[in-house]
Image 1: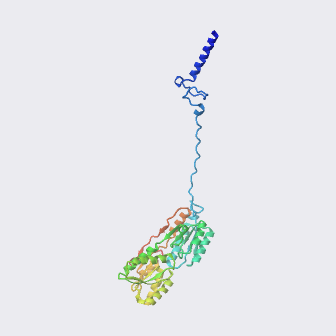
Image 2: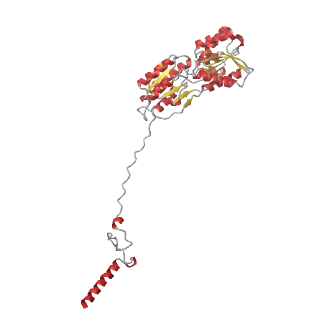
Image 3: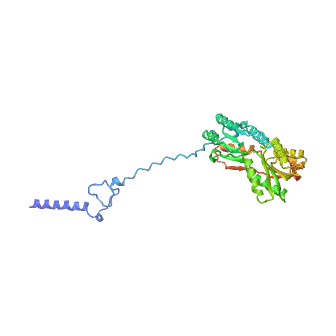
Length: 373
């Protein structure tokens, strides 16, 4: 019995100790740190050691590579660090039909030489097929930029697309082309419609009581001829007593301007009160025809023309020309600045207008001495 009692007490002690180890949380102090979780944890507040183990230090995300802006199709190989000396430029000129065009050619050539630009220059002799051939030659030569004053507005889309596909940008100079805008990067030159408006307003001043006007039109289908005719008509709409008696093309040349004016005089004679010439060269040719006919140019027949070349200033000094509206041909510096920006992948304005004035006989003698063209 004694042994059984001892055995009983021993069993009870084991049960009590077991109750203490798995008892209520208030009676147990949680060890720190918590031991690994057994099947019955020592303390309900303990978190399993495996779960409590510190998470591995986060690995640093790889640095993102700086995104480089993609250059447009027309950027040259040297972009974005091209200099003028890196440029190879093709220029498909119209020809040498006027003083204005000659001054424009001189500006393009002389500026290229001053800047160190490698210039490939072509004179198309006023033929569209020659300009198209020149542009294809420039594409084959791998020029960086093509400058193009189109002889007429239409018929360029195929060859412009070829330049686009070759990654060569076209900058329109002096004249626009009727093509989708994506096929050229910019246009630099005059607002021909506004030039026509200026001429129309000046004509209204010369004919306050109205009168009959004959018109010498530029090259048929060209942007300046189309727009100068449009602008002039817009301006004189307000003056119903001003009538366009006749209109013929003189192709922007002095010789043809004289020939067409002779035909006007033969047909209309003294009924002609004024002449509107789309450029000075045609106007100067017409002045010769008027004088030979026996009338006083600038007096018997008022004359307004466009361009403001030196010959026009001399005609005003002589009293033969009443007004010339400026169309600036000295576009070389602006053109090469735009060409360099294009080669470097910069985006250009769709149109960079020229700054131009209107000139009269009263200060022509003073201005002609400083005129560069």
